[in-house]
Image (cartoon, rainbow, N blue to C red; front, side, top):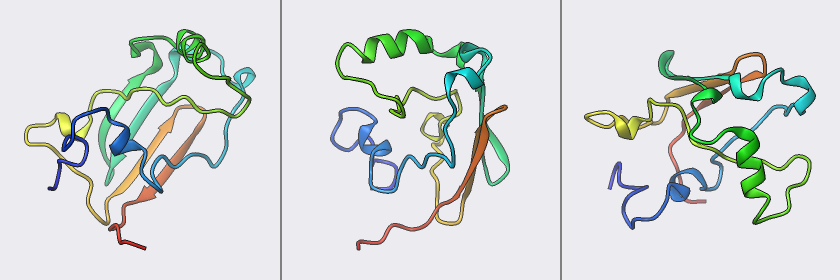
Length: 127
C-alpha cells in the first residue's frame, strides 16, 4: 500500500493533505500589509537538507487575488482563514521512481521574508 495513500480510491489530494496532524501551520501568520507583492513570494522546501521545491507565487496557475475571489463565492472568508493552494514543482510522487517521506525525514519549508517551518516525520501509530 506504500505510495498509494492518495490514489487508492481516486478523488483529490485531500486524503493525502487533510489527515489528522497534517498541514502544520505557523508559528505565525502575517497580514497583507506585511507583504510587498503577493505575486512574487519565493516558496521552497527541503527534505533532509536536499532542495526538493523552489518556486514563486508568480508560477501559480491562478493568482492569489483571483483565488480569494473565487473561494469567497462558495464560503465566507474571515480573518485568519487559510486557503490551501497547489505547490511548486518537485512533489515526490512526480519523480521516477516516486519519492516518499519516511520516519526520521526532516522537512523544512519557507517563504522568503515570512518565515520557516521545520518538522520531523514520525511513524503513524493508531491512538
